[in-house]
Amino acid sequence: MLGYFQRRGDMDRDMRIANQERLRALKRDHGDRVTIVNSHDPADYERCRCGIHGAIKARAVSPST
Image 1 (cartoon, rainbow, N blue to C red):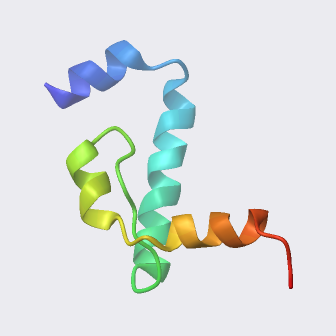
Image 2: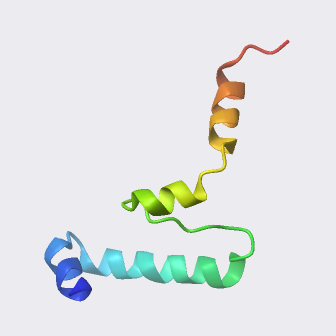
Image 3: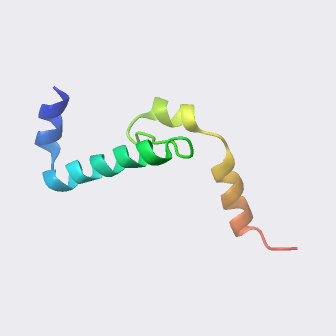
């Protein structure tokens, strides 16, 4: 079923497949340093939230002292 859904939603099948391969290589080569998150899955996002993104954004907009 997933394969059917992916084929139906493909704008550029070759690009999607190439991107999947890049993600697999990233996980294989740097899996100890990166976390790959499904941006369409709210539960996956919630599991990966750590609060660091808000801290980085706050520092970027706060004036230096």
